Image 1 (cartoon, rainbow, N blue to C red):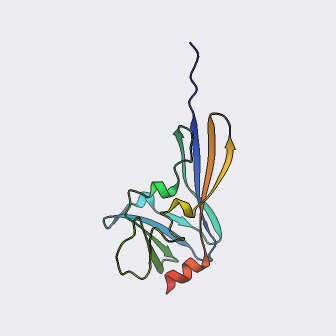
Image 2: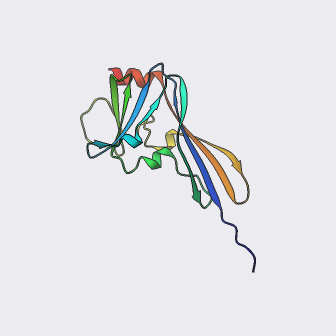
Image 3: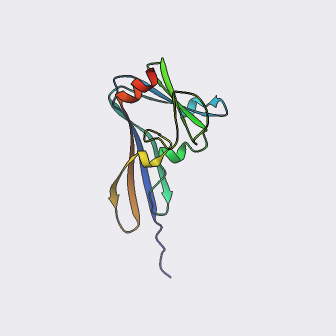
Length: 142
C-alpha cells in the first residue's frame, strides 16, 4: 500500500493603505465589535491581516471570506472620519455605506487582487490584496 499525499492551499491576505491617513478596520456583528479582530493599517503601507493553510488545493480563504460572519465593517480614518461596509446589500439610508456589489467593497472577493505565488502538483500559495485609496478617505470624509 502506498502513501496518499494530501493537497493543500496556503493563503495570505494583505490590506494596502494608499492614503495618507491611518485606517482602522473594525468588524461588527449585531452592533458588537471584538477587539481581537480590529486591525490598524498605517498610512502608505501594507499589512498582512490574514494567513492560513487549508486542506485541498484551491483559491484559498481570503479576508473577504473571513468577514462573512460579521454583518458590517467600519473603517475609521485618523480616529475621525468613517464609513461602513456591509456584508449584503441593504436598503439602509446611511450615505457613507459601501454595499456588497460596489467595486470598493472589502466584502466582495472580486475586489481583491489575487496572485499565485507558488504552485505544484499538490499545493498552491495565494496572496490576496485589497487596496484603500485616498478617494476612499475623501468619500468617508463627506
